[in-house]
Amino acid sequence: MKGNDFLSIGQLSSDQLQLLLDTAARLKADWQAGKREQPLAGKSLGMLFQKPSLRTRVSFEVAMRQLGGYALYLSPNEVQMGQRESTADVARVLSRYVDCIMARVFRHADVEELARWASVPVINGLSDMSHPCQALGDILTIREKKGKLAGLTLAFIGDGDNNVAHSLLTAAVKLGMNFAVASPPDYQPSTSYVARAKDIAQASGSRIAVYEDPRRAVAGADVVYTDVWTSMGYESETDHRLAAFRPYQVNAALLALAKPDAIVMHDLPAHRGEEITDDMIDGPQSAVFDQAENRLHAQKAVLYLILGAGGV
Ligand code: CP
Ligand code: NVA
Image (cartoon, rainbow, N blue to C red):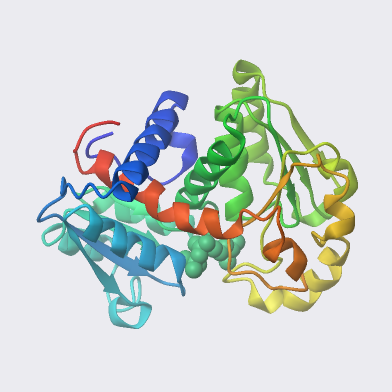
């Protein structure tokens, strides 16, 4: 993976995905055991943000520090990518300064444009279409909690047409997990993602099911996952979305239909009382804060492999 961009889960083979998970687990265990190797000593990461962030910004910055390198935060107002100067010029200039670029953008095409022009690897820190670093941390969390991935069923409830749902769908089928999603008719996963996932599922043995009724998706699930109803960039649709998604709240009544040992996940930030209730995030089945932590460990693996420190 050395020198590769990381723009979507879809670009990874199942073996690469496994390598990332194994490397993340190893780096996490080493860090927790007090091992302080610095394989990325002197390496730099430029972090371009067009949208707000807590987890992505802090976990990438800390990840670089823990690996011996450092990160620079570049705010939306500062760079004004595509306005103050072209995306291609931003990519070419940053490539002369830093060893890797992480970008959070509105349009997926912008992170692709950055990657096209950059001479250093580009990592997608969230676009409208995908959030691959989130999916990686989430899958790591599921593997830790359940001890396996293949054969488990992940139920995604809510906006199936968003970045997080797309990346989870793709990761799940590459790892032999079943994926059930329940969304209102206008918010079901993009047909192109579902078509590609179905092709992969044929080889991996995964099952994909798209429902309108959240109870059908959650029935017998091992993981119940939700995300905000209005993603960043779609704020003008908030009222319409609130009405459409109202029946899709993850709460105790819905979770009761999943397996008794099901875990509850949310990528955060959450709109408590909308897509998820307090007792779900704060309750005994919640994996929410472990998954937030695992962003750090998963991204350390991404940086470690892309910046050439070798596998596992
Ligand atoms: N889950 C996630 O990406 O959080 P931030 O938007 O805070 O980075
Ligand atoms: N789907 C959400 C994820 C935030 C981390 C958004 O794009 O706003």
